[in-house]
Image 1 (cartoon, rainbow, N blue to C red):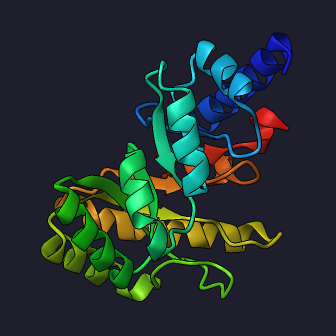
Image 2 (image 1 turned 90 degrees about the vertical axis):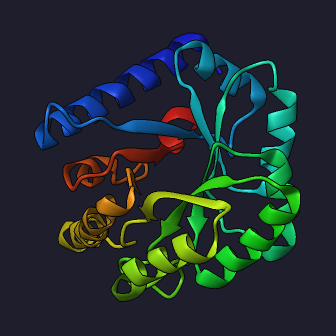
Length: 225
């Protein structure tokens, strides 16, 4: 991708994030995770050169390949996809900075077993299905706090850092807002347990997510398409 086009897209995104952040509070800080699954290594290098540090991949194999090919850069890699249990060892070897998609107590217990065998820990977010959509993974809002506390108790090799949700997949802004507000209220309850990350918002709805309290967004198409 042309450097000037990438610079323009990145500057525009940062400006929009700033506007949404200040609406929430001038003290509110938001991290951008650039979702790089549909782009090439050259574009990742270019965006890194422009100042972006956190990148997200949704397939374990792609994450592992990119960690290897771009190992000369100190990129903060995030794993944002659904994880099948047969890919757990591969994810542990790829060693992401943060895994966003811990979506059940069963997956947590399977992860705990493998992490303990490898003698490592991993930072993760609990995924919440805040809009209760059948097509989405994640724990139901009513059981989210209980599940979070169970994982903290039973899975010492998992370092839970907060929560993640994907906004309701509808056109009605009120419904999307409610899905974000639901997740943020759970995040607030978990703050005394050390939760510091509320990851909500993608290319189509990140401004609304930030207004609702998100401090981490996942944006791909606005940068790379």
